[in-house]
Length: 136
Image (cartoon, rainbow, N blue to C red):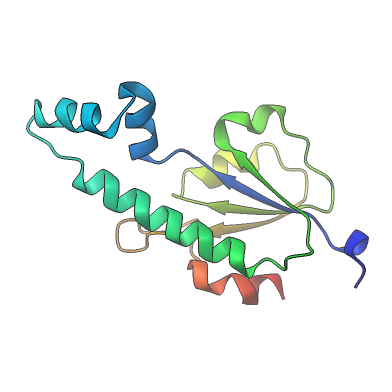
C-alpha cells in the first residue's frame, strides 16, 4: 500500500498526574516537597507516569515507520483538524474517549489502556500490546 493511501494515526493523550505536578511546581524536588508537606509522596505519580510512557512507546512502536502519525494533547482537541479517514487512538484513562469523541465525525477510534492494573478500562479496553492487531 502506498504511503498516501494509508490513513493517518492520531494519538490522543493527556498529561499524566506527574506532568501536571511538574507544570505547577517546576521541578520534581518541589513537587515532592509539596506532596510530603501534605502527607503524600510522588511514588504513585512516578509509577503511573512510567507505565503511561511505556504503554505509549509500545503503541508508537506498533505503527509502521512509514505511516503518517501525529500526537495531540486533550487540551488541544478543540483546535485540531481531524481528516475523515484518520484512525484515532486514545491512550489513557476512560475519560479520554468521550472527551475525544465529541470532536469526531465517523473516524475509526481505538481506546488503549496503558495501565490496566490501575484503571478498569471500560472504554479503553485494549492493552498497548494489542496495537499491531488493531491496525491490521
